[in-house]
View 1 (cartoon, rainbow, N blue to C red):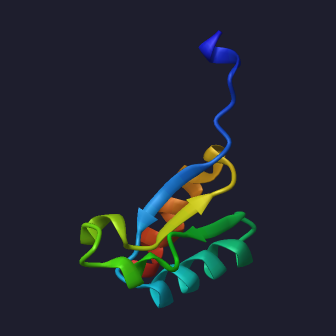
View 2: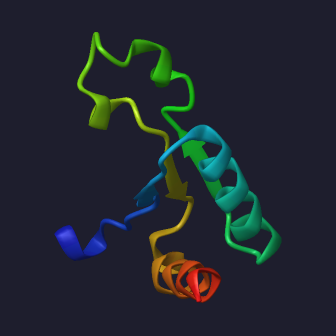
Length: 78
């Protein structure tokens, strides 16, 4: 039965800050990879919550785009 369940969303990475997350999500969208930023406003809770729980995250709408998205981000770092 697990094989029949399709994974829809997939976390790509945590970003250091909201600007980075928004920029990378925009690049992915421009490349045809649907992406969104989650935890965008949790930075205000840093100190009340552990820092790693407050960092913005980039999520892909479709898990099938994970390899392509990782490749695109790797190309940006070169």
